[in-house]
Amino acid sequence: MNFDNLIKARKILGPLWQEACLKGRCWGPKRPRNPYSASNITLAVKDELVSISQQPDGSLLVNEFIKTSGTKLGTRIKKLFKKERLNISN
Image (tube, rainbow, N blue to C red; front, side):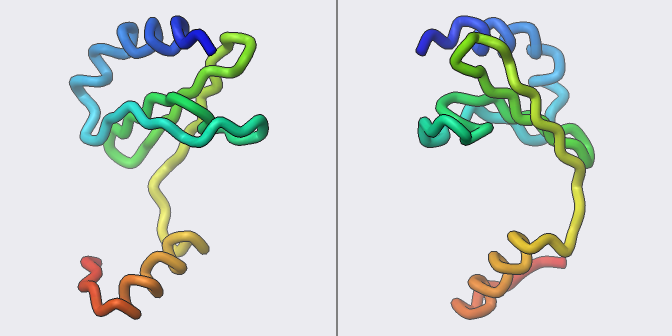
């Protein structure tokens, strides 16, 4: 797949990239129904996080998240850490 639009998006996001407290380019497994498939851009500013990926047709998918707690995934991860006696910060 040609990632020209995602590369262009990363350049456009330059000022936000500098502002972000968490940022990165990530690669997820290539699966048709995976919204984070292949390459994506991840940015977090304060309590908000956005993940941008490119669809097969070249369009960009923007997934938005806000900081929360008490999620099922977070609970599962904390349980695994406690089992292995890793300290978890509050």
